[in-house]
Image (cartoon, rainbow, N blue to C red; front, side):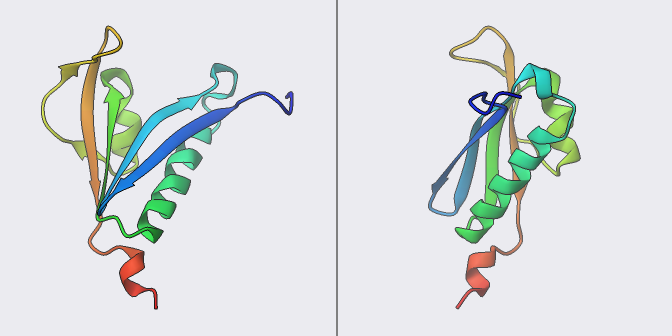
Length: 104
């Protein structure tokens, strides 16, 4: 592994109490090693610390099972991607309480 090589990436944006994950990518050479799951879990933890009550993301239809295993559920119908030529699902994960509410 080259230390300048990008292995994976995930973007988190928080707007009020909703977290949005996007640009979730793992380099093809490193897929199947749990890196994507680690990226999602790290960003979920940060989102909870920032007080979100839910996280939303858009995913290619072919990878939604990955997100279902992490507790996400389908939100709405499949729609075409605006930038690419493939179908997308919106997914949602809700939290009962955010960790920020318990911090003093």
